Length: 274
Image 1 (cartoon, rainbow, N blue to C red):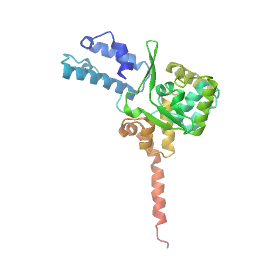
Image 2 (cartoon, rainbow, N blue to C red; image 1 turned 135 degrees about the vertical axis):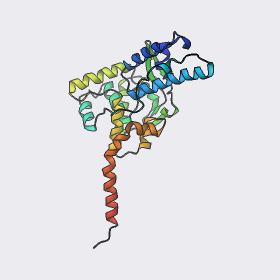
Image 3 (spheres, helix red, strand yellow; image 1 turned 180 degrees about the vertical axis):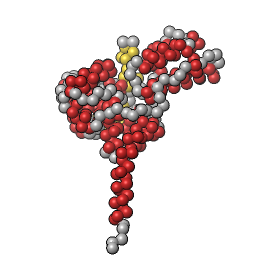
Image 4 (tube, helix red, strand yellow; image 1 turned 90 degrees about the vertical axis):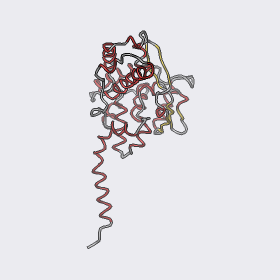
């Protein structure tokens, strides 16, 4: 996160040269990239921690982060996502033989982050056991493609995928004749995927969402199917179950009636017969 969002912006300045005004300009630049409020707060916390460490350990005289308002929000707003019906309407309009069809399918059915998918190689896919391994992430900065290990240990994970998705990935690989095992399955930048999604939403007349909202759509679908938060946490690669609950917990009240009905049924089974 530091390498992706902080160093490219401040690489030509010493820490003691960075002013509160510089921090505000950096915040504006990060906000312009369209990240969620919670992600903006995570990035802000990273740079704040960096300056706090420099102040406490290396006697940095002025911490510019203390003099500006933090960007982003610690708690997520109501999420924007597609229901399964909305996703079906969208994906039915995408050419099944295009790379975008496979990208959107992986996004919706795994909940992976966009950077994780764009870093996938053929060797990351276990076609026999229907699994993909998330071991790296992709981003582009200063016209350079960067592939690095995820910042959080929990982001390195193996995700079980439905068999139909394995087949779709395999068909894509076969269309990329001679693709080396260590080459990216989708050698494009994130902005291309975002623009494709936006154009297709307009063309197909479906509700507009961001690429990252497909991750939320995956979780909403799992919750609707009764999947428990701990399993969702492991699937998404969250560091802590609190992150999962803080982000998606408000969707669970929709399941309360199911619990009440289940308890009512259990009580009626044991009720005495008149």
